[in-house]
Image (cartoon, rainbow, N blue to C red):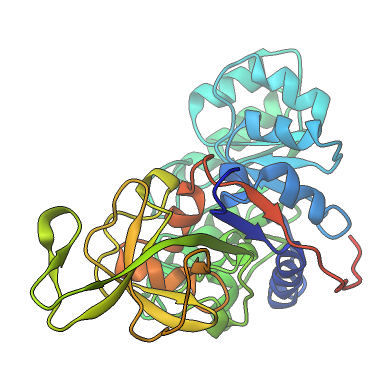
Length: 368
């Protein structure tokens, strides 16, 4: 019989978060970002759950777009990283994949090939990862017009570097650069907004927003948790308590003996570890929960198990379920204790942990 370490997926929470993104996007439409296997939730699963709501999906690469088609979904799919080979252009054209072109080589593949899919251009407004600089844009547009490819251009995309930081002026600066760079072509569409931008008061979201982590209940804002932003956790990571014992005062637990009991302490071992994707750097005092009561980790996380202090949960038994993150303990809290972000925890959960869809009687109406 397999162990009961599982990730429970609440698809109604996902739908509610998407509707929250639409509400915050105002007049902009929201393309659902389902890259990285749906942020660890299963790309086919989450895309299918949003099928009647999302008019467009966004992924990183073409293999993720194919996973959406293999699930039987027909909406256009935006490839945020564009394409990685010339032959991918033909696939994009035949399957309504919309690559975001960000460099000269991708542009050459488009112009020299016999296929012209709908595409976007990425504008580098200051993040300096990908994209054409504003001063390069007129030449790019002239080339597209000369070769007859301009008619297939959907619009312009950029990405914010500091939208998660409410105190940063960079988002406003990037927005200004983007507006000025694209102003000669006012009829083309514009997309700038990651999840964080949905929570910036007065931030223009233009035509298409791109909600990602917020769909899954994680916070895109520094210093805020998902629930504080009105988001619902989609994933609950659970594992069984496999033993309990009293650690006597002066005794330690686990590798490195980094935690030592100051007094006799009821300790439990939980069947989850970094081999499952739980962060190794989540040490003593990282929260967990059992029967709705918050407890804490003690010592180092091992590959297959971790230790918890059960002082706040007397009466628990072997086989009881421990919540590592979910509705009682937010994934953002765990990420903060581990020195990372919820994105990494959700996408890093390994295949050893089965994803189980939670049944739900709730159903919110919605349409594309």
